[in-house]
Length: 329
Image (cartoon, rainbow, N blue to C red; front, side, top):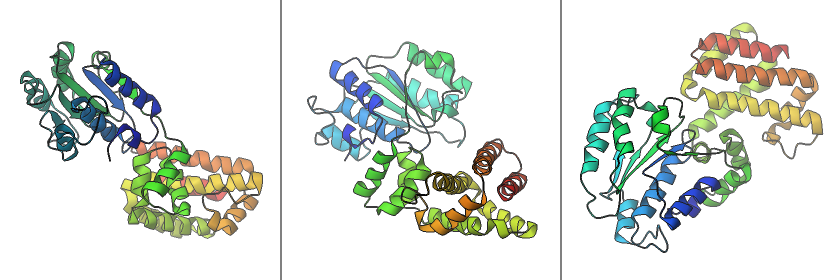
């Protein structure tokens, strides 16, 4: 299925796009800004399909010729902008796939729609090439730019687009989606929801990921024994973590949730609302061992470690400092 009702959360964006469709006040350019895997492309596809739908009363109807083409990825007037260089959308990409192509009228639809993922990767030259098209678009031209952040976009680009910022989806909606749509059991839905932090795409990916289950298992094993580790064992554990460098945020989030559980249990003495409630005997030990200030210091150290790693600070050093902070508190 692919209708606006299938978008989890994001009510402000859905309302804006619905209003644009019903009033006909459609912009020639939109920026959908949100975290990776948050569902930007899903929203863009549904909006594009609705714009081209032949049934104006119930767009997207999913049944007309245009909708069926869109669902199969073969709608000739919905174009997905690609780029050969993985980290850059260059001026040639923009000129060839958007600027020059938009001069050709739609094949069979009212609009010609361009969906550009990873818009934050456009070079300044590419953005300048796009600018003239944004300033003087043909009546049928619509550009949907999907980004994980607008900081790299020129102000002249931003000022000519409707910017729609995605917001974290409420935990209860994410949990319900996992349980009802993916048939995930409640205990696993709780864990994935906690780590996803309002990102439905990430929650879905975690729910079906065997690798995430392995990372979680290893992290929990480490946390159970961390106060008994000596320096050599800690170094060994750090090197094992290094195998998961591409998932280090997930690893640190597991540790973060563990200590948040400990803080909550210390405050309430109630295990019912904990994410790691099946590990309550170990959570209780942490709560008994550490003060409120100590657990707060660990949570702060975790956030600091995430910032350092995102800034490419040495991995081993960052993790050593984190584990030492955990042991000290």
